[in-house]
Length: 171
Image (cartoon, rainbow, N blue to C red; front, top):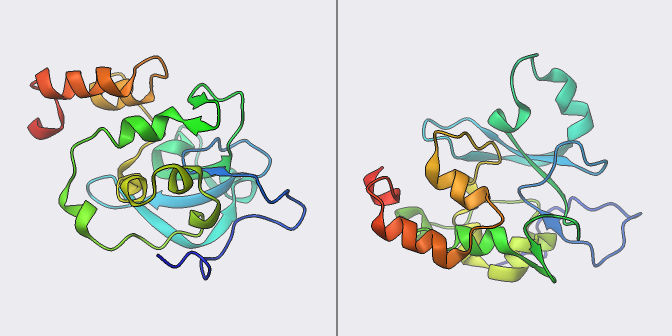
């Protein structure tokens, strides 16, 4: 994987060790738009060039939750509910999901990869599933609600997947 030629979302004013969350907060000062939810299955179409969230958010019509149509990236922060020491527990849960045909496809072009916490922590296993991640979770979506819940462990998620008729295999 060539991450050297991947455009970087970081600016010269940032310290080098900062990692980025590909499921970040839109209102963080450094937030950028990672991609647009434009495919029929809700997966992400990555932007070729990052766009500062503060420039894009005013263009979203009133009544539309920005994370419903856009994915944002922002700095990983120690106060995140999904943070455990230096690791992201969210990516551990995402990796619990059954592999799909997309896992065998080439990784999507991503301007975040060189500084992505998920990439640094889990590599290809995280990148292959990243386009399907939604930061907008609705109560009717049991699987994504469990993934987003920081109190649910990967083992608990796996148990639910294996025992639930509503698990990913039923989709």
